[in-house]
Length: 264
Ligand code: ADP
Ligand code: MG
Image (cartoon, rainbow, N blue to C red):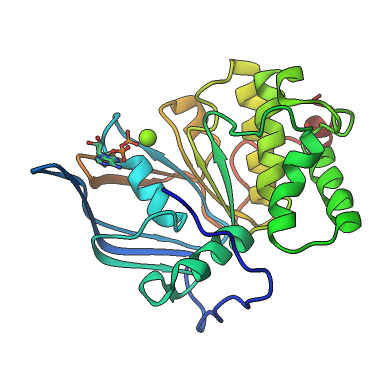
């Protein structure tokens, strides 16, 4: 899939009234594979309010990534409705969707997706460049984001000069550099050891404590334990939606800020 780059001069659509960050209504996603139809989502309804911290769980092939791609405006439903911040994605063209992805959403992936042979700082600057932020401010904000994830002393390191945990922290810095309200992560700890998993989950917990909405996909109960709510998918349907902590309270396992800053 090729993605249009956002045009920094175009305004974002103005959201209406009070609204959830994410509102999926009877969302169906069907992929055509030659003559075969794959029913990846079969009617999913999900509302996520600002400040929530949600784990999406379910077996491989249950539709988790498909749902995440729709939530992240990387794909659109075949049927049903998706409103992000009160705006129906059906009303948006590809360039408006690109602006939403750039300004409102920070993405983190299992395989880090850092640009090779490019410093941590330059990687984190990239979404700011797309957003039209000038070079000097861009550098300052990227450095601040790297500092916030404990990589203040790794600005000039290349991805292959960092451990997996450090690369994923750089990827989180890239996701938060534009100060997005919504952070989406598809199995962000899938390639990490136990210690790095705990570091990344502490960072997500802090981002959530600061008011950001976080939705992540995971296979691990240990990871889901950091979140406020666990949604389970099976065969393209939500089969369970369990809240472990109220949305307005801090996430269940937030360590003092200092503990995360000490991680490096
Ligand atoms: P999960 O992330 O839970 O493993 P996915 O959302 O990736 O599940 O996939 C759900 C179903 O949709 C699977 O059967 C998968 O093979 C299918 N699928 C996902 N993406 C595509 C695609 N681009 N084209 C065809 N089928 C797809
Ligand atoms: Mg997946």
